Image (cartoon, rainbow over all chains, first blue to last red; front, side, top):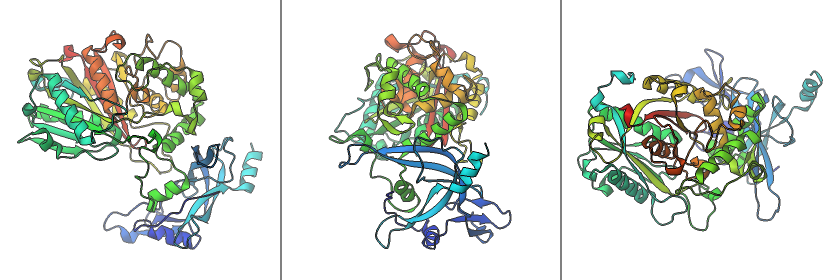
Length: 144
Length: 395
C-alpha cells in the first residue's frame, strides 16, 4: 500500500494533531450527543458546545470504487480501492480501503480504522485508512 | 415561484438567442475569449445588437477563468444586472432562471447568460486537463492522497451504491452511452460521432470501477451563451422564441451524514416535479429530455428522480429496446450529450434543448417538441436545476 504525502492546513490541524497520537477525531455536540464529521464547524457562538472525541474506529462500507491509475514504469493499471464508510458513531467518511479484494462485494463489510504515515518525511501527516475488521467480518458472514 | 399562468403574459421569459463557439480540441482562445465570442454569436442569432443587452450572467467553468470584466470586453455599458454564478453543473439552468426572473420583474429586459472554459492544452490528454488544481494539503489533500481521483471517483461511488441497492448493471449504463453516441452521429458539433456498441462500452478501459471510459463525459474547450428576454420583445426577433415555462432548483446538502441517500436519490427528485408543476405540465407531456450527463449513471438516476420510471427501475428502463436512441420512444440527449458531443457543463443540455424546442435539430429533430425538459447537476449530486422549455406556441 502506498499513499501520497499529506500536509496539514489551518482547518485540518486539530485533526492531524489527533492522528499523530494515533486517534481518529470526530466532533461531538455536548448538548445533543450528536457526532459530526471532523470537518464540520460550529456556528459562531456555538463553539463551547462542540468538542473533539476519538472515534471508536469501527464502521461499515456503504459503497466502494476501484480507481485505475497508470504509472510509466508499469504496464498494468494500479488498482486502488476507496470507499464510503459509515462510522459506528454515525458520520460517513470517504477513505482508502486497504487489504480488500477489489473484485469482491464489499457492501456492509465491517472495517476498522488504522492510522498510517502518508509519506517518509517527518512532516508528512499520519492519515486514517480502513481495513477489514477480520473477526467481526467473519462472524457477520457466517451468521447469514 | 408562482405558476406560469399568474405571470404577466407580455413579460414571460423566452430564450431568443443561442451562441455556440467551436467546441472540443480548439486551442488558442482563452476562456474569456470563448465567452465573448459565444455572446456575440447569441446576439447575432437573436437579431439584436450587443448594446441591447442590459444584463449579463457569467459562469466561469472548471478553470474559473471568466469573470465580470467580460462586460468590458464586450463593450457593454450601464448594465442593470451583472454577476458571476457558481452552482457547478447546475449553473446554466440556474442562470436562465435568474435571467427569467429579472426580465419578468422588469429588473432587466435582455439578459445574456454565458459559460466558457478551456481546460484542454495541446499535447496533454483529457485525463490530465483538470489535474494539478486540487490543493495537496488539508482535507482535499487527504482525499487526493487516499486515492480519490476527482469527480470520477465520487460518481463511481454513487453508481456502485445504486447498482448494489437495485441491481443496476454496467451493461445498462452502457445502453445510455450507446444511444447517445447514435444521436451524436447526427450532430455536426459533436466531438465523437462514430457509432459504438455495447461491446465497445464493456471493452473500454476502466477509469474508476464501475465506470468504463465510455461512461464518462468528454473534456472540451469552447463557450455557449443564450439570450433571455420578454415574450413581447421575442415576438419581433429573428428566431422562434423558446418559452421558459417552469423552473426549480434543489440543493440537498446532506452529503457525509448518516442515512444520506447519496447515489440513490438526488435533488432532481424535488427540482423536477417543482419545475413541471410551475409549467403546468406533467411527465407525460414531456416531448424531449435533455439531461445532464457527466456520467451515464447521472442520466439513469435523473430519469428515476424525475419520474420517468420507478425508483430503482432506471437500469431496466434505459436498456429496454425501443426507448432510447434515434427512433426510440423517448428522445433523450438528442445531440449526444456530454458523453459524445461536447462538455460545456449545463450549457450542453440547455443548448440542445433550445435547438429542439425551436425545431432546428435537422435530421436529429424530435417530431414533437412542444415541451422540453432540461436538467443541470453539479458538485457530487449536490446541486440540481431544472428548466421546462416550450416551443413558440407556449408563449
